[in-house]
Length: 244
Image 1 (cartoon, rainbow, N blue to C red):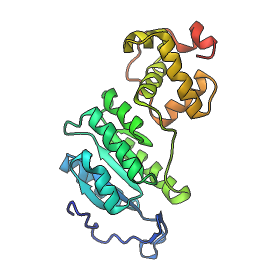
Image 2 (spheres, rainbow, N blue to C red; image 1 turned 90 degrees about the horizontal axis):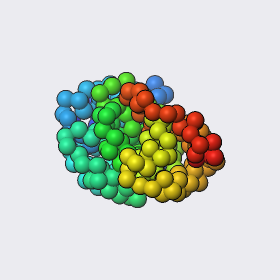
Image 3 (cartoon, rainbow, N blue to C red; image 1 turned 90 degrees about the vertical axis):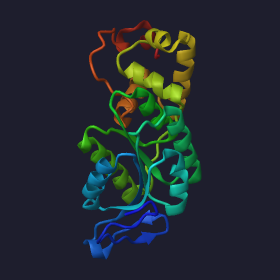
């Protein structure tokens, strides 16, 4: 396979416009087409081998995340998978994914980041990723791509509300158990500014309370709690009792 997107041996895909459809030569299994961008050759090949048996056809490969939109425009895939290994800068990732979303909104984006790299994870979500998996846990990566595949074969591209990087960052910190005041100190903001960003996030998510917003963040994978923080629960703060 090369950067021009040669197909895996034996992979046969049938297309119906922009939608994947069952292929009789694969036993009725729906093929979904994907573009991979990764700087880790061994990791990439292992993952592609696993996905080939799950109905995912890799039609394009890339090494530079900044060229993601070009690959998507050329191959028109159902899914763009981006591995952030190899020194990808958060701001560059954010710009690249946003440009990709503008180029082809129907392509679902899945990203893989190290669990503790919050800046990259936040930028991936803010850039339009429908899921961000822990690249050090192959099962998480397969599950994230599988969820995007299921959405593509059932209802078209997976979609989610587009949050800003700051909104994602605040939701992640709150989900870790911090109060609005603690989040304000961490981010060097006023508490009122934190509440302003939360209000905007609530509106985009179609929710009214902090509990609903954080439940959404956990389902989406934005919330990644690695170790207990020893901080007061967001549910016990005065601000949370007021709906913040």
